[in-house]
Amino acid sequence: MNKPYVIAEMGVNFYDTAKIMNITPLEAAKLYIDEAAKAGIDCAKFQSYKANTIVSKNSPAYWDTTKEPTKTQYELFLKFDHFGEAEYRELCDYTHSKGMDFTSTPFDYASADYLEDMVDFYKISSSDITNLPFIKHIGKKGKPVYMSVGASYLSEVDEAVRALKEVGCKDIVLFHCVLSYPTAPENANLRIIETLKKDFPDVRVGFSDHVAPDDTMMTLAVAYMLGAEVIEKHFTLDKTLQGNDHYHAGDPADFAKAIANFKWIDKVLGNPEKTVLECEQIPRREARRSLVLTRDMKAGEIIEERDLMAKRPGTGISPKFTEAVIGKAVRKDLDEDTVLTWEMI
Image (cartoon, rainbow, N blue to C red):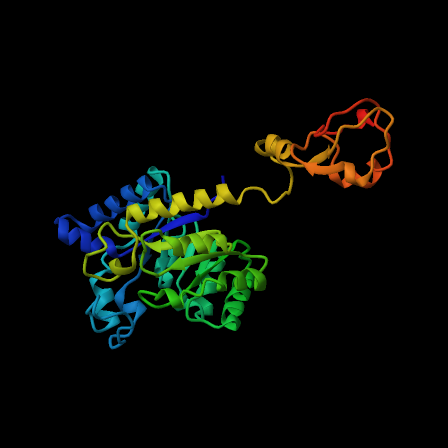
């Protein structure tokens, strides 16, 4: 059975969970991995950065400050940049022990380098789509590269894809993404998935979702139906927590529901080959029509058009042969309402 490859974007949500539960961020991150594995998720994704290499100190917030009140990007990133190579290696090993893939989005060259022997693929943020030197640095490493293309023009996506191909990167996934937290449903523009598939036919296309979860997880279901092969969404254990990404993240139940939707969609989409299914064989026979006599007929009588009517079941001569039957003689006495077969005429 097919379903999209599902990535739980842990981001830095586990820091808030650690504070609430009075445990270390590393313990909280492992708890997130545990719950993701139980929900049937394929990959746990983190973010690797240091505040002083990702943002200048006065960069203003671009998120909903009623949900996350921090006023500058630097101040926010400073809260969540405690992990380094050792912590990510531990999380990588732990994630693999749970049967999931591991990745982390690097936001600087040092992170990209130390992650090289840990990640199953690299993830590049929408924010780095025009950072072509960085994209090339990652693309040279010989690993698959998954790249979000939020807040970009198609020409910028094309430049980034060309940059990856120039340095020999062959396995590329482009994520349709809207760089707005949370994304209003009317801004989700999921048809861009189709646009990316059409304009970049030699790469895979996915969807990185920032729409707040609904009861049915319909946004992700629609993305899959439009052709998203990879689905990424922020992950939390508690959507009510104050903080960076909880308010648009999915919890384990949301992810489990989305995965069940994908499986159901795949089941009902079925096979594109038009044929008669096994379950249709009996209905096909009983519900179709045959040529039936409208009166008693004696052996040797010639069948006229008025002697025939198309009725169920479809076990006799098909109505498509009406012209061939008219003018033929019946071989034996037949009662009204007889379903004609070829042996009878």
